[in-house]
Length: 110
Length: 116
Image 1 (tube, rainbow over the protein chains, first blue to last red):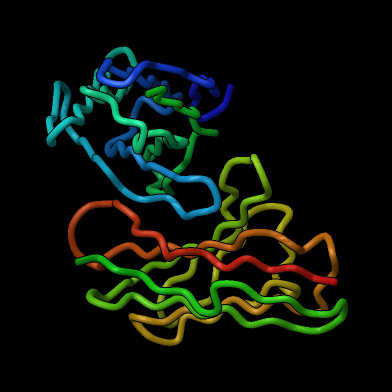
Image 2 (image 1 turned 45 degrees about the vertical axis):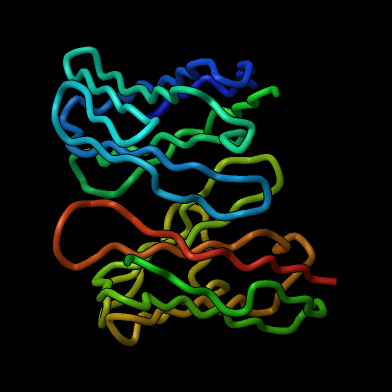
């Protein structure tokens, strides 16, 4: 089992819709959870982090964490074509080295 | 805040030569820096973790004598690819973790290496 798993996609949503990106992790002791956005040919950019169970909102982005289910998600409301990118889920397991999922490619169609 | 720079942004070198890539945290001190490699359409692969003033910790399968890492200060880490070969051509990205606070990492813009 991979430490961090994401659906590779591609996930395609129309402009203005909600994009839902999901991630599961294997280490139940993980403490920190991150979402990065990576445009093609560019390096990852941190967009959200969450440490506690529940929801965390920042503008159009909402991160959701459920430690009991070992599940973290990212919702993007009012999706824009500029949101088209690969979204990387990252988890800090108990040994404190961040592990990345393979990423989900999102396409927002005008 | 939390800006990380990398230099050069791209480099082309001949097979057998060495290339040095610099990673700097511009507005914070980074006790830990990380080096990743990413091949086209593939996920990030952690190569090594470096802590200021100590030897880097390399991931399994990464040759420490080929990929030399130096973390000489709290704001600078360097990766030297020695005796480069065409298969070393890749996108090399560094990241830095602030000394205080959470576990988040901030990435540099990356260096695209082409070995001919």
